[in-house]
Image (tube, rainbow, N blue to C red; front, side):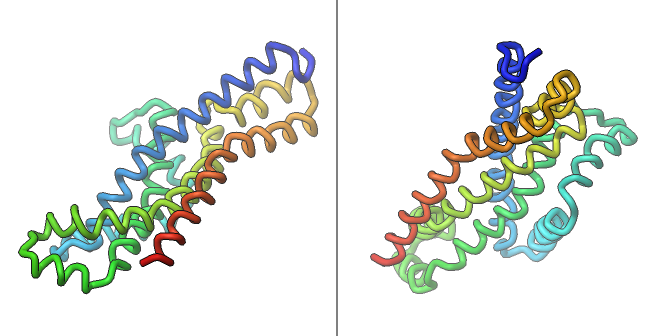
Length: 219
């Protein structure tokens, strides 16, 4: 097998597809978790705030690699055996969702209190204030942070090779290098493949940062 034979290229593309699939699923679940935890941190109920704070600090304070191993190797002791891809999605989503929840919380609390007071004066309920006044503005502030989290999550997907998910790193490390011995060339190619996958996210994050800064300047 040559370095860029049709078989090798097909395997790389298949692995890249798994990486992108993992990123998409983990991003969707991660941002759902981020909103739940972000709102939980702002709850009126102390128990909810304590639970969400514990989750956020625990997952931010422990290694993603260890969390991945825990979900994959420890959960079966409790009778829960999950497919490797699902374990990868859950671990990535729980870890980066904890970071993203701080983006949600920070954006919401950054909205001036005068707007909340004005909405109260208009007799809006708490839900209406959040839905119609605070969240539309806060969401715009969240977008650049979400873009950066997505890029970090993409880089984190490389760890799933350690639980046997056949992503692009697995294909290079476990399949192509042992069969070709072209370590230098293939790891260099892997670098560029991750960059190409990340490039749309990088451009989107920069665009969102510009949009958000324009909004702040005009506010």
